[in-house]
Length: 283
Image 1 (tube, helix red, strand yellow):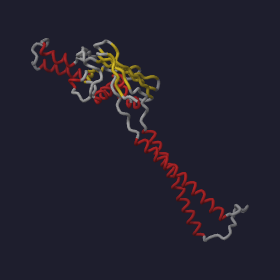
Image 2 (image 1 turned 90 degrees about the vertical axis):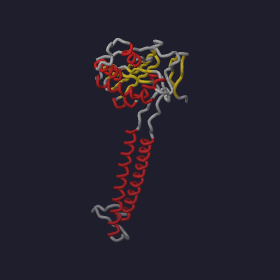
Image 3 (image 1 turned 135 degrees about the vertical axis):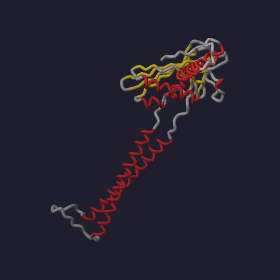
Image 4 (image 1 turned 60 degrees about the horizontal axis):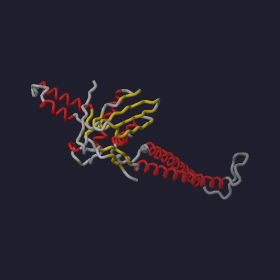
């Protein structure tokens, strides 16, 4: 079922990006419409709509109102009428709260499109009072998971609000560094074990193996000595292989956990009642 929101004008002094510390009543209201699926499923579009609402609500720049919120308000109004709290549904007392609750200056719309094996999310915000766009943002990702991680940045760009802080890279960089160190250590241990094995072979077979596949070593030590050295070399080689495999696994895990690069402008331009306003982080 489709719902429509009554969009009205806020006071002239209201601006798009507001102070997150202000209460909800002092922040400009933004209505988030349902995303339109294009070759994507309605369930996917609904999930991304919820993600956009969550991202904008968490930032605290706008007082965010979604279609589900509107459904809840309409349901509550119907309950009041059914309970007899409003004998005349057309009276101002019954409609004042609902009309004020659904009045918003800014309208955010968007589309979730599937392009082959990739997904594209497009968001745009309209200033209803001035009948002009505020900002627009588009991102393409190879999977829905990657696109979900970009939703906070998309929502910030599309509404002209400051970008959220980038995700931490400490853990993946630490894992890659540890994996690289373990891999290098495994290589060093492996080279040392090979060098020791070569020296031991030279001692056993100074001129190489004879045609009879026997060695003619000179001044050989007791057999137990060579057996012990062989066991030590086998342990070093196993340690080298373990370090190499563990280092490669840690580095691969760090690469997998590395957050996707967010290619986004750090400064957004938003129209206000007095002209244009810059919002974001300056270099």
